[in-house]
Length: 216
Length: 204
Image (cartoon, rainbow over all chains, first blue to last red; front, top):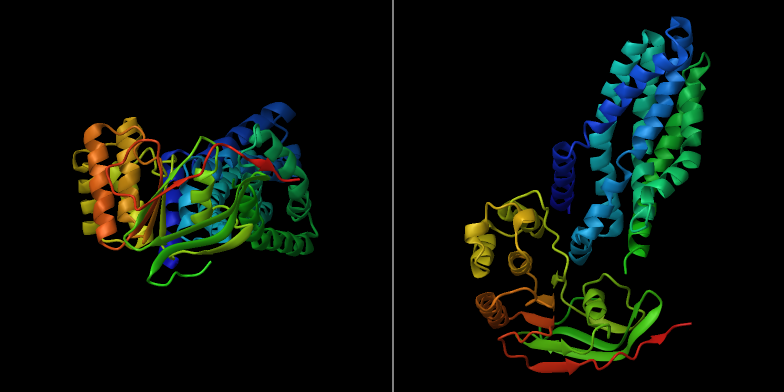
């Protein structure tokens, strides 16, 4: 079983490296950070005040980018069918997908956020708070992406539906994540961790149930 | 579902096959011994593929009981090989998961005449070559029961002969085969099950 999990995760990582999934959040993030000062003006104090929140929203949208590549291709190619035929449960498949997606999404997100913050002049404690909150949220965001990709697999216009599903579910993380940027941040960070942990923990169950229900 | 005794490779009693809320088959019985092959025939849409998917564990058993080996190989119309990788690498991915040796994979590729295509990316294969790659994946899996859904689709005459030889070899080694095919496969089927014309009732 461990051998299978490692093989599945290694394959996913190889695919996201070779198909550019790894670089997508990075480029997206840096584009947003470049465009933002053009839109609101180069006032440094305004950028410092709003930069954290903007980078948090960008992180949410970056979560949406790979939705249609996470599960759907493997279902279409019959790869999920072959795993299930070999006795690998849908929950284990969703868990593998969660781990591999987090590995290819979390670290690039943090690197991108660091670069984007420096471009906006965010430094010192606000910068470390932003990175800490994004780091804590990244497993939850990856979990949301896997759950939504499993639920919408096979639907026409899955990415549009995925966006509609993601936004309400991600609001708690956005509130606590962006909240942690302000003065009373520690409680917000604890709540953020709790929400992220909950989303991570239910991902194998929800994703597995969705994969099973979607199979005909 | 439990592991079959050594005598029977597959035993189904009173099974129903349901797909998307439609009852395709009811009260289906089938006993397949080790070393035995059975052919499923019948009109399109009668439930052959769904039956194979149910035995493979992809569809729930809504009625009846089934005993099958733990290791079952399904060869249907989906390739399940990464398009960007070479034939060898894509098959190796499954061999690693199945815990099969390099030798076993090599002999499966030779059985399907894929040696010359080992370094060709899967996306460049022709229809018949894809089918051979799919069959090589099935052969290399080391299962006790093969579920073949139209295994001869797209194959030329020489490849159909290769398929027949591979199936005969598997039967000799004590495996069992359940095959749905409209094309004559050169192997001796001890049972032929005509599943008849389409008589699907809808489930309310």
